[in-house]
Amino acid sequence: MDSKKTIRIGTRDSELALWQAHTVQKKLNDLGYKTEIIAVKSQGDIILDKPLYELGITGIFTKTLDIAMINGQVDIAVHSMKDVPTALPIGIVQAAVLERANTLDILVHKGNLEFLEGNATIATGSLRRQAQWLNKYPNHTVVDLRGNVNTRMQKLNESDWSGAVFAAAGLERINLKPTDFINLDWMIPAPAQGAMVVVAMGNDDFTLDAVSQLNDIETEICTYVERQFLKTLEGGCTAPIGALARYCELEDSFTFKGSLLSIDGKQKLEIEKIVPVGEWKKLGFNCANEILEKGGAELLKTIKESLKK
Image 1 (spheres, rainbow, N blue to C red):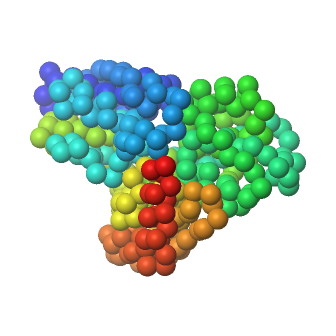
Image 2 (image 1 turned 60 degrees about the vertical axis):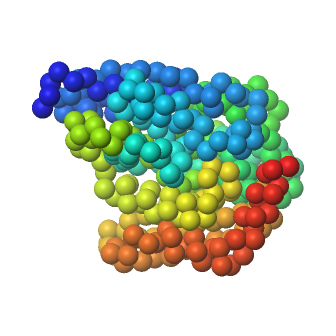
């Protein structure tokens, strides 16, 4: 091992992003590698007054770190995998996917759930969560909520909203998960939700060799299937697309659930499939094509048109 090289870990400077970077740092240190953390502010963290899809960039949280890596300022970047575009910039490769955490979305509320029966205002910055929520609770209002996990939690506490939707994994990682929450097990998560990915330069053999030791093969395959579903639907970060693949050891098979909804939640296309373990490579692709044939292609056109307005 080239003991001289220090692997520079690029990360956003939010508490959750730093937690993720420190987790990777500890794993690399335990393997005997030297590391250093370099925190960078991303455009997605700086521009908080516009909904994400209006910024018109997929990968707004990853772009700054991609540039830092291409410029040779950092060797690897650690991301929440659901924030990473399905097509990586030229020269950058996926080096490892860490073992997945909780995949669920949760509703954080204020101690009273009566609003589920009546009218309510729910906050989320995600079109997927908005669409799925309105599909189930059509008489509710959904408002935009932006910022890192800490900022969003604070905004919820200071608001008169009934609740806000978060990824359970993010809150659990930095011990922010409150007692007042419910698991939204009916909501299909974002592709790769709960998984962390490490990216590196494709020509950096030393770093790729080091980081590859952190890879969890089951998580890698499940997130591959989910992201293939997303990519085939051409959702980028903007269309309300949910996907969840799971490995079932007992049956040696993969189960997949995917959904595409209209932004107002009124239209919903869903698919569920179980395939033998050997058939995972085309699972996301095949499920996406079924959705496209069942009216998904028209629905995506409508979504793109409405987002342009």
